[in-house]
Length: 361
Image (cartoon, rainbow, N blue to C red; front, side, top):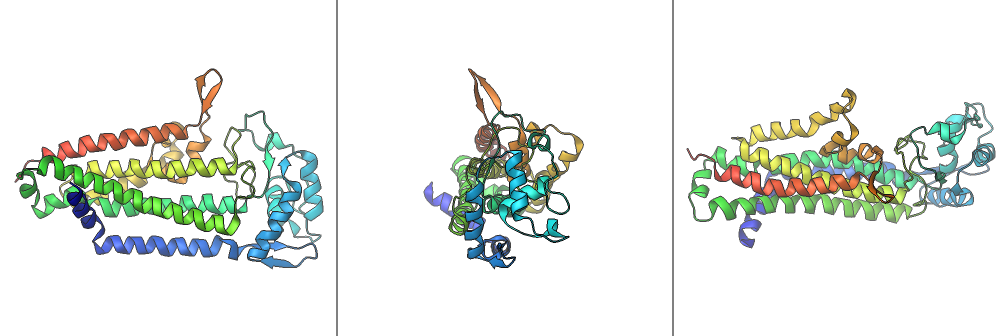
């Protein structure tokens, strides 16, 4: 069985288009890392000069450490007054992470405080705990970069896994496999296991590499800050208290869970469709089309069960926590994780059964 799995894994990997897709992923990831990593950071010193690269990250963290903690209107006004550039266009200048965060939310055109209270800025936030201010640049780079790369990773899975069953139909080798001793069971299971191994190795490998690189560049500073506070207007609709470290953990669960759901979908389609080309088109459509559903008023819980929305991560995190009774609450992210495991188990049964019952021509 192990030899069969290895053989099927080699078949998935050993195609030029898969190598090309992996190369594109690496190029895009490298470009994003260079353009968003520590080397691309800039911070304004008190004298008006700019620091760049790792020195900018160091200064940014030092400034943030002076002001981290529960956010109040008084703290907002103090920070904006302390760091705003004394120029007419100061509101558009990159200053530092803390100032840019608050200026984007409560800054006037000149960078001064606009007087709006904190709760009014986040109407979706229902938690009684105050929002926590802290350094967030490294976490934002990690979350945004991970979301964008996982969307591209989904297309890699579509390209690599679509031929798993359907290629046997188009080549006519299904007759040989299905009439052999182990073809209907062991061979089908080997194909499915090899597909999930490919998914876990590619996605897991990328997430480990990305986590290491951004941890090396930015560290874990600001992990206890609230995700709603940033100048990218990202995750501002999360209705409960959530730190950047907690959001990063949830995103890793969503990214892996979304990959498992997508793999299950591709395997079933591959067993159903008669050619690899048709499978690729069908799988790509099923993967990409749900991205349009957000404009049609589809409930957030339903959107959260689609791989592309799990990769983007924001929608599942915006779903209010579920009450389990006794005051205990759980994030909807864990519902997605359970759904991913159910879909994985279902794909083992459905895709094998569909393939085994395929009528040999």
